[in-house]
Length: 215
Image 1 (tube, rainbow, N blue to C red):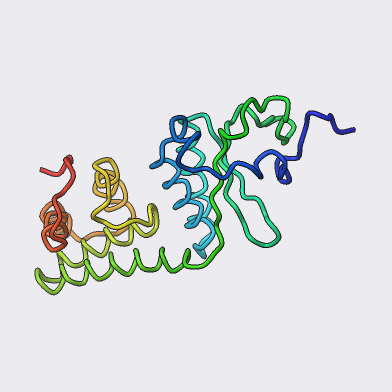
Image 2: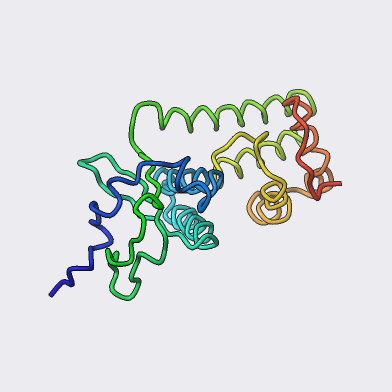
């Protein structure tokens, strides 16, 4: 028998149907950049054809939100999916339900429509921009730097879906110390010039690098 204070986590429309603010009441508790990254990772998990990559994106999103004591679910609104971010304390993990008696302020949740005009195109445009930047590096500075720039574009597309120029110091460090050495199978020549290659990407883009470990 269902407790009157329980709502199935997969169908808790009454819990989050009014939580349509991503910038105001929830912003102090869940920073805008965290909301943006949660949206990016959700879209990547939904669009990648590789199940392992999709799971990795979903796991990265959960870890990101966990640091702020939030969790996520995707709600089906008559065929239009919506990402809902809400405080983890609302969720009864053991029972797999949202406890409505734990909800103190429904505006703490954040809703992000995942369907709608222009959304997929936006992500395609970002990826196309990064690919064009990598190609420009290849044209201007040769194949070795071009291969490294392409690896950076792959990393950003797979993990963050943002412009290379918008990477943070931590994200750029993650690329060089983790993704580049483990996932891009670089040659010895590529490894030797990776720091120069990253600088050249930003030079070609006409942007300053973030303060970073790359020296």
